[in-house]
Image (cartoon, rainbow, N blue to C red; front, side, top):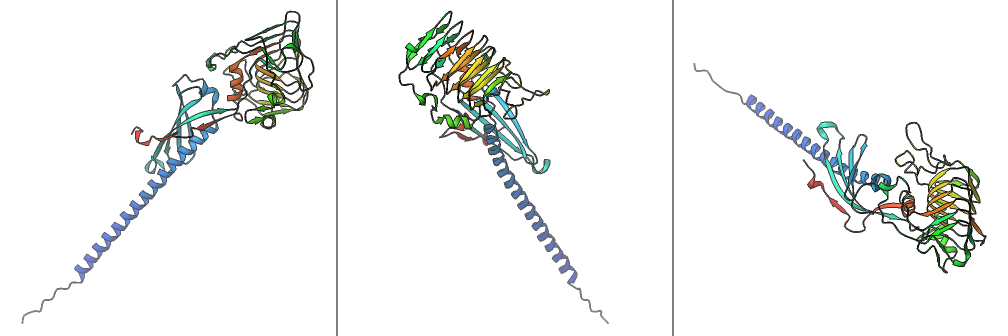
Length: 385
């Protein structure tokens, strides 16, 4: 009797179904992996862009005027910042002119480790220094009776302070020694000297606003920006203050630290504070400072005090004793028209560089801003692989 042979199809169907499920599962995993990679790549591309923006904002916000201004034309330097867990940004600053700089910002994402990191973005921005308009027109600008006696000197010839040569690149500007509302009010006695072009110049338009309005900034604006505020009285032995590690201790907590103009490159040489004295002040027993010195009342310098920058006095300005020296400019409003006396061996010397550095190196008076038009360029395609 012949045996009936029948073959089942369950096994082949099952195997085929498993293959199909495997293919679908593998495809699903592949698609999910691709989607994840695309998502991570998109996230890191966006992160790289935001890192360049953050790096640019931080460089402009912490603009190192002392370093960048010392660069020669078309010289450059780099600043690197690390953003923990996100990435690293390198900004290369190139000095184009006295006021124009090109900032090349290159950001690389490190988030996710060696496997997932690596996205980068590079942008370039042209920026300009925007400073307050405060440059005086003479070594001493004032009004009312002004008398120089003894060996006092006022010089309108432009002078670069000792050791400042590398950061004083502006052309020298010859100015009057004294600019006043009535040249007949200026007198000299003894061996006192006034020089400049001319030694004494007259401007009858000088008034209160000359000493209280500086372009868009008012006296109130300036005093509100003060880094150091003092009530007046006798002030002694101002000088730089730094830690053993070379960190400048500055600001309101260190009211006697007015910078270090006599030692370029030292810890406090880049500290150009705005110092506001709300009353009458007598500065004596030596001391040194730089920046802007604003005095609401009268100012009396007595003995061996040196200041680099701009002094603006709403009252009268007097000097006594020897060794007082001002590099930059003095503006004395003399609102009460008292007789101002510069006596002894005091010297006021026009220094365009000292005034401009006092303004440019104070973050309240100078801002770095991108040009209004066509300042930004995407450099990512030019980055080296």
